[in-house]
Length: 102
Length: 191
Image (cartoon, one colour):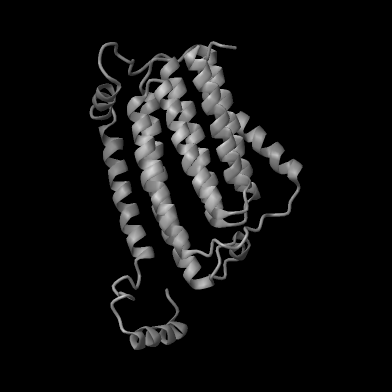
């Protein structure tokens, strides 16, 4: 119990990933959907860092860096698209995007 | 002992913050809870000896991404309550847990099965930042450059998408000009 091993971190990563997935499935607002995506990426990062530490291998940390870079660019492009959508339709609900009428 | 205490403390705090993020009906609460959760996650990186990753986590997530979201939220109407999907909760929670366990099994199964050997072992005696620099600029140089180009593309895309009509300054114009612009807007639509 007092000795923190790899399993502890993997369980934590699983719990955070579940929370993120629940957010992705429950939310209607697209901004909240983006927040849930950030939670998903962060939980995976914890898993990478923990594996990197317990196996004495730096590859995990490298992947975490690239995940962070991808998350940053995803936010930039996603928010830009969201702003354009909001200017046109005046809301950012997911239900209004279910048809491809443009 | 200290490691265990800090792990459980930060695990509890992170889970609580992210739970608030996905359940609250106020967009501002969600944003602040998410920022707090990001900071708490960097604590795990420091516990795990990945100092540079922890610093990058704070700088990029709590600094850049949160500021970007805060600016983005100024465009949206965040005062009204968020609507949520009315669906079968059991399916949502069940699917989430199953998918998360699957992801962890995909990560962990190869290591448990045959013990993946360390490709770039952590060297004793030099700091984490130095190690990261050595590996990043030798073995991962091309992915690093590709990531740089991707960030550039994302920046240009963000400017092109969000920056329309940014050449007009609403504060420097007279009231009549602003009124004209508003009438104009109804015809042309901002797009």
